[in-house]
Each structure stands twice: as structure tokens, then as C-alpha cells.
Image 1 (tube, rainbow, N blue to C red):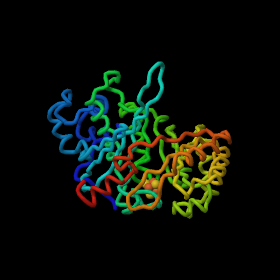
Image 2: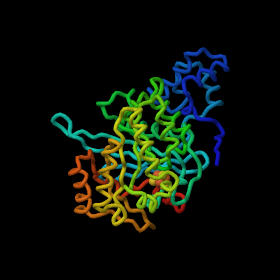
Image 3: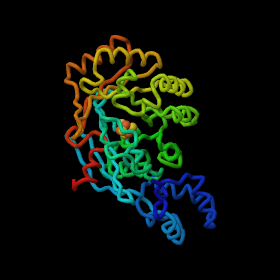
Image 4: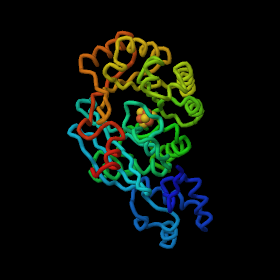
Length: 368
Ligand code: SF4
């Protein structure tokens, strides 16, 4: 389904396009940067706050554009400081954005690193068997403005809390991962445009190396992405180290099996000169055997990738379970013994429907 909002959101505009629009309205080119500075650096939420713009221009902008294309309807907090924002879009679709805070050892103190997990579609067409996002299928792609809007909602939340150590002009988080609802590479053009806006000096000015795009394995788009000039990171959601296991839980593997996926991943890594990440959700008795761990180690060494193991978050209505801690440890030991760079995520957010897509499903089916 293609979605056209009543008014486009200004969050989807690049400086080049906005300059053109403003020129057509009889405004000088410098106005575009002025407007964008109010949005991304001063982070105002109304046209009236843009006080160095002439009043007639503010009125014209208000009749041409809307600001936020998404409204926050709910925040759920978990004890372990994971927070999930539920946002409502103009067509009454719901999406989720998650903040995850990881304590990290700094010089003489523990500091919190904040990662924002962003959605790229409403629902998902790829039907991975363990995932809540795909349970109701795909509804539509998000516009670039709806992707950027998720980050501005997080900015508003964090700015309000006012960490005094942060300069207001910086984005108040450390990493962005496109691992929320949807397959980001199936919404390629909007994704790349949103990343351009997030990264640009006139936009959020957020370093591309701190942005990770995660895919279930869309080979043509991985190859296309390898030629993009922006230096963001790529993560492959592998979740199975053989075709047999991947076929059982990820239908995409029938279209792009490991023999085509892994060379594409290697090509991306070589062109970008960066280590890839292989995401691996550990699911009891599905993909957590020693044999899978050994195959995974081989793949990781072969394509020079880091492995991120994520113990499964239960999804109501689905039968899958998380392996117990000794089993998780045994799996990871195989990677360690093989000399593979790896991490295992200390699971966060169990008490707030942490698996992506759960909160939205509940909101769409019942009142939360
Ligand atoms: S894991 Fe990703 S690609 Fe698979 S169904 Fe869920 S959102 Fe879609």
C-alpha cells in the first residue's frame, strides 16, 4: 500500500529539496538552513518558535508542511531502563521505537550508552517464524519523514530529561539501529534518504559509523547498499548457520540461501572496509546446538564478522523459548574457542513486550 499524507512532513526534506521549494516561494536560499537549524539543532516543535523567520513565511510553511507525522501515544518503561515508544501515524497505523541503555565502563565510572532501535515499515512481509512484527503481515513502508520523526521523538524525551553533560545540539543517544519493525532494505529509498537526513550537517549530524542497518538477507539490496557513499554499518540477521535451519525459520532464505547471501555480505564488507555483524537470536532446540555454533564460527571467520548472540524474547502465541543460561554459555564457548569476535546480549525489556512488534500488535488488537 502506498501512503500519501495530507501534508508532507518537513522531516522528510533534504536541504537541497527545501531550498528549491523555498525558492519557488520567493525566498532566498539561506532560509532552508535556517528552518532546518530550528528543527534539528534547536528542536522546536512549532512554526511560531522559529522567530528569525518572517511571520508570512512561517504561515506559508505551515500551509505547505506538517511537523511531526507521528504522535506518541504510549511509553512503556522496563525496570532495566529499556523504554518503548508507541507512535501513531496519520493513517492510524502504529509503530514502535525502542531505547536501550547499556551500562559501559568508562574511565573510573560506569556510563550509560543509549541505542535507539528504529522501525522502517508498518508490519513486515518476510514472515520470520519467531517474530512478532511479521505476525499480521506487511501494511506499508514508512516514509523517510516517519523514520526521522521516531528519532526526534526520542530527542524530545531525552532533552526534556535534560542530561546536563550533553550539548543540546547533539543527538542525545549514542547509536541508531534499524532493527525495529520491518525489513529496512525492503524500503530502500526511504531508508537511504532518512539516513542522509540523520547524518547530514544540516540534519541531526549523527555519525554514520554509529548507524547500523540490519537485514534478514535481501541480496540485491545488500549489493546496492555496498555502493552507497555513507559509511554506516551492516548487520545480517542470520539466526541459523545452515540452509536447513534458516529455511525452517526464515522464508527469505529460500530466495537467497547462504551460497548467495554470504558472498554479498563479504562484498559489502570489502567495499566499506568494515567488519560486519551477524545477529543470532538463540532459540531453544531450533538453532542452539553445538553443530550450529561450529558452523556459525566458520561463517564468521570466513566473512570476517562479529557475532551478536541475542537470547530469544518470548512472543505470546508463538511456541519458541529462550535456552537456559548454561546452554547459552555453552554455545558462546564454541565461538570463543574458535577465536570469533562475539557478544551475548544481556536481555533487556522482558516486562514490556520487548520483542519488536508486540506492543503494536496489542494496540491494534485491543486497548493497551
Ligand atoms: S525478523 Fe525482521 S525481517 Fe523477519 S519478520 Fe521480523 S521484522 Fe520482518
